[in-house]
Each structure stands twice: as C-alpha cells, then as structure tokens.
Image (cartoon, rainbow, N blue to C red; front, top):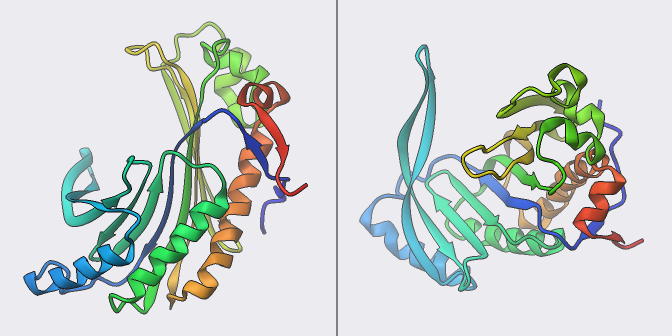
Length: 259
C-alpha cells in the first residue's frame, strides 16, 4: 500500500542536497571492455556532448562476509562531466547514471536523464533491469549541535530514539537507521540519522532517500520520464513531511512550485 505522503513541492534557497543520482541498470554489454567498443563509447560521448570531460574509473563493490563488509574493486566505468563539475553521467557495462551535487529543480534532472537514456539506447541496450532515483540530504543548523536539538527542526517521527529524552546528554557520535518499504512503484529505502562528525566539528542530520524498481522491461525514453516522476513524487513527500517550519525557514523556503 503506498505511503500517503503526497505534498506540494517547495523550492529552497539553501543547498542541503549532497547528491542526486538517477540510474538504470541493464544486462551486461559483454563487449564493453573490448578495444573495438571504444568507437561506440566515443559516439556516446558525442551524443552527451554537454559533458565534455572524460575519465575512466573503477566501480567499488561491497561484499558482506561473516567477518563484516569487504570492499573490492568492480568493473571499470566511464565518467563524463560538464565544464564546471556540477553534473556528470556514468556509463558501465551494466549501468548508466546521472549524478549532480548542484540540483535545483527536478525538471532539469529529468530532461538530462531522458537524454542519457536515448544515448544508451543507441549503444544497443533495449531492456532495463532496474530504475532508481536517490536524494542524499545533509541538514545543518548552527543551533543543532546534538541529536536532541533537532527536535525543533525535524519531525519527531523521523528522529525516533536519538531525538528523545533517553539519550539526552549522551555523547552520541552517530545514529543511523534504515527503513525499507515495498511500494506499488518499487522499493523505498530511507536511511537517516544524526552524524556527529567530532573530528571536523560539523554535525549534520542525514536523510538519504532511495526509490527504485526492478524487473525487466523495455528501455523507452518516451515513458521513462513518467516513471521517474512517480519515484520523485514519493521521495519529495518523505522530504517535505520531515521538515518543521523552523527548518523550512532556515533553508529559505520560497513557497510551493506551480502553486
């Protein structure tokens, strides 16, 4: 049953978003790492010409073992970045994504992502296995130097135990919770909590919202925009209901969009 979280979209002056990622995954292109595929990658770069700077990276993989998580090196990916480093697209053998740390409005992100999907189609990718949208927020406020202080700025339902009296006065360095929900459009994962960052004296409250759906379907640039809108609306709802008026004021609430 979907969450009843539809809220009017607001625009804010302050930047609390650390990163926004829109991504598709698909069956591996087995020729991706072959030398003869370099021509296709060059054509892809030309197709996404607003990102002229290129570099090759190694994906990181995390495997959970009895001894705990182990980080390893995964498959290589190409990253194409715009001139000022604000936006980039990533292309790997089984993944393509759009990333930014300078998000303004969703419409800009959506237009860029649909263009990326069109470029991936030209590589011969006809089906996708996963579509996801993720917003990583880091809230900061000069008056919120410990977990309990966030009660003035964020919803008590979000804060839970760390914002309650039980831990009042405790030296909490970090308290992260992960909530996974099955929704009609896919899976919604909410990672949130207080991060004290004692080494940098820069405490913040994390709100990381990841919404994705899995299952093979045609990779269609004409319909994927509507699907991404549906994921965005749910994420936006979680974000808006998490804020109290005092936090909205601190972020510089400019009011509802398209009100």
